[in-house]
Image (cartoon, rainbow, N blue to C red; front, side):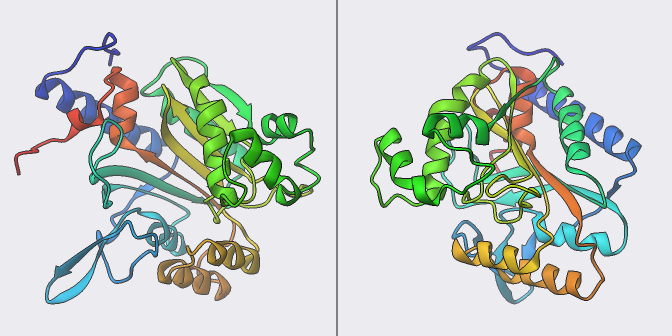
Length: 304
């Protein structure tokens, strides 16, 4: 699969073939790693509290279309140690060159696996679309240098004002928005022409599921991958401290009924507490594979 020259486009047949080829390679790789493919409900009984889920009525019941695969897939670890799903997700977002209201996600979970294993797996998956060595930047080190602090030893709580001033944003901007703004301004541009792994993500962001790294105050076992300025992958080791997870998720309004079901299953010993997981936007990965700069080209059967 070759990348198109900048500014070029693909025919509908070429987009179908590119996506089909990529999905085939992903399935072969994951099956070779011992993952079982499963299907979780697209129609969900509960909202995820983000405001992104689209409401729907199916079979006389009101509910929601999933905005992510997430907890329902992790729940399957009760039955098999490695699982993945490739399925449709829906968000109340207008279509633009990097967003679609209906899109395809690959999500996977592996029980009793290490964070290093997950990063290696992510690199192998990304390499299916974007050959060549990936680069890594530690967000904790980069931001620590910017603020003159060691973020392995202390949290960002005392430095929120300094970070807001650095970004020329209001001092009352939430920390998770400040971290997003910092990454967008100073790190994402470095992904031009390459796969950039942003590792050592920080406590206080918008991902409550990630484990606080042992022996650190604010560094999470979490990463994101950007290719040509577009986020394609996110991955993390799951937080095993249930109280910490619930507290952090609740603080940003993301402790929803689905996560509660998983936590209850973990406490009951049905689902392993130690697992790693990642998600990949398939259409965005297709963009990386082909060099196409508009995700809307990968909407198939758009007339329907």
